[in-house]
Structure formats: C-alpha cells, structure tokens
Length: 193
Length: 139
Image (cartoon, rainbow over all chains, first blue to last red; front, side, top):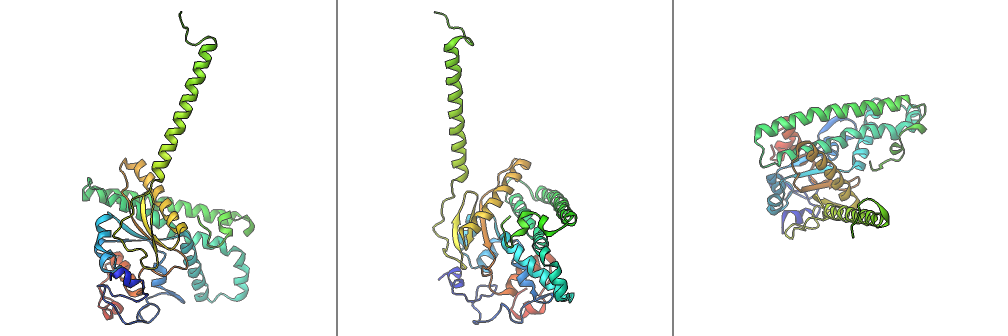
C-alpha cells in the first residue's frame, strides 16, 4: 500500500513516511502558537500557499515518485473560501486578545464581512505570486541567475500591486458611509472571488 | 464578359459571400481555440485517486487533488490567469503541474501539524530544529 493510500486511513505520518501512533500530532502539544489565542501556526499555514519539492511530495506527502517525475512543479493552494475563513479566525483571535467587549463586537459586526474580505486578500494574492514563481523556476532554458532576477523583479511588481490594491480597498471601506455600501463580494461570507 | 469588381449586384453577392466565409471561419477558429483551451490533460494512471481525502482532477493547465470540482476549477482558473500573464510578459509557456487544493472544511494535506509547520517554516526562515520538531525527529 502506498503512503498516499495509507494517508487516506486518517492516520498521521512522520516526515520520513513512517507511521506514528494513532492520535498523535494535530491539536496536541505539537501546535506552535502564533501569539494569538485560539490560532495555531498549523491552522494559519493551511491558508498559506506553499511549494512542494519532488522529495517532499514523496517523503512528506506520501505521493508516488511518478507524480514528481510527471510534474515540473507541485504547489499547495488554499481556495478563496479558506483564505476568508482563516482571515475571520485571525480577526476573532485578535479581538479576543485585545479583550474587545461584546458591545464593541456587536458594533463592528456589520463591517465584519468587509474586514474579512480585506484580510483574506493577502492570502489569496500569495497564490498568484507562488504560481508565477514556479512558472519561472520551471523554464528549462533559463539559467539560475536569470530566474533569480526574474523572480526578484516579479516580487517587486507583485508587492507594489498588492499594496496598491490593499490601499484601494481600505480607502473604499473608509469612504463608505455604511456597511451596505461595501463591495458586493464582501456581503457573502466565504464567497468565491 | 468582363466582371467589374466593386460594383453591381454580383459584386454585392460576392462581398456578402466573403463576409459570411470570414465570419464562419472566425467562428471556427474561435471554437477550435476554445476547444484547445478547454482540452484536458491526460489522466495519469499511476497516481493515487483518491489521495489524502481528495480526488484527482485533470484540467487544461494543471492537475488538481481537491475535494470538489469547484475547488479544482477555482485553482485551475487562477493558474490559467497567471499563466497567461506570465506568457504575456515573458513569451514563455507555463508547463502544467500539480495543485493540491485545500478548501474551507477540508482536512489538512498533512495531518501532523508539526510536519506541516516544518515544511513551511524551515524553508521560510532557515530555522533549525525547534524543540517541538526535535521531539518528532524533524529538522
């Protein structure tokens, strides 16, 4: 049975693919806190896009070697819905840490979808950055120096564009007089982009 | 009998004929390119399916392990948009790859949170063997 098939059993596996004891890992003492109550690093990372090497695909993820041989790149991407959900959990954690009272929470509740939507943008934008970079890294005719240069150039442009979009969305939010005037996609929690 | 191009009823018929031919050709070309765009990659036979509670989806520009078709479509559309922008800016083509998709409510790709954190954090920060990973034999 392959590592992937064994993973379907819902058991947990170590970095080298060895099986660990049932119930080990997950939400036990292994969780690394990120400084916000109720938010673990592991949970936060589910919404962070990540590149996977062939060795990691086989060893850590338990995929067969054929996958790595077939694909020049492998990435883990969250959907926009997940970005939004984790952004909401981050906001909840921040409100809890700041000891924001129930009345204040009620007061900001109408704005919540808009705030979540804005907070989800950086997670979602990272997906584009990662894909663009794996496309660069997958070019067989480009040397390492050229790839580095192209990635650095793209990161600058991407960061500037993301910053501009964030400022624009925050500006729109501040200009709007009521949550009813928020962008339409913010009205529906977990809405797709 | 001479034929004057650009005047008379026969010329109008010819213009219409040419126009119709161009329109039909245009529709054919657009249709063909649309078909090419939506043509899916061949399904690899030696990949596990399902895997990690996800099914294997083949799309035009990527493979995806996802829990739903909509999740697979979302990330494939995103990959196609980025691939187009990449091509426009560099003239190079983006090769198809594998996207492992996690949607809201999905189980994590890596069930052991410490392993997941190790995968990301060591790469991002170069961190070496924090105690939690040392306990797991990682790092």
